[in-house]
Image 1 (tube, rainbow, N blue to C red):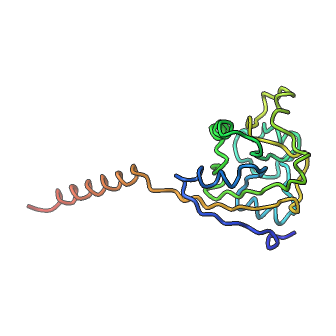
Image 2 (image 1 turned 60 degrees about the vertical axis):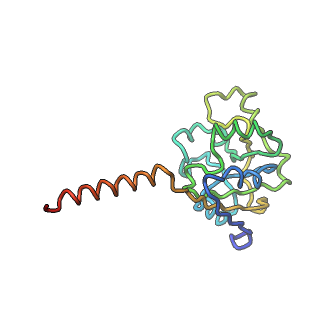
Image 3 (image 1 turned 45 degrees about the vertical axis):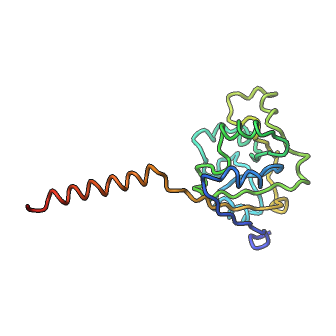
Length: 189
């Protein structure tokens, strides 16, 4: 399947309202988060692939210890049954709404319900006592093989708009005041 056959929903959301705007879209679903380039690779390849062989750039330095990667599984976020408190705790562990590696342009690839029966829950890590490996408690789930693009039921591409902060506005005002004072001090009397 090529990219043209996947319907991509485009959202432009402010960073300040990201949680209240995006979380309702994600709740009740299982999804994979990737970059624009990652999404283009998925559409070209036809699969969300695992990274056991290290063919893809690691998102974080600790990715080499990823529980999913070490097993050849695909890492997913599972928000089907989480309470508000569990989602809050998960976001404290990893801000999956706009991960840093997505550069304010995360792509959310929703897993078809037909594959939900094969999901491996995060509690599997606890059962294996895989404490030396990296995983995200509560929210991370795993798929034990590559995921065909035909099993992606929905794609949501988000452009996160960063608001100008008061600090940056204050900094601009201070810089302007300093320039004004400096310029006045250079003028002859």
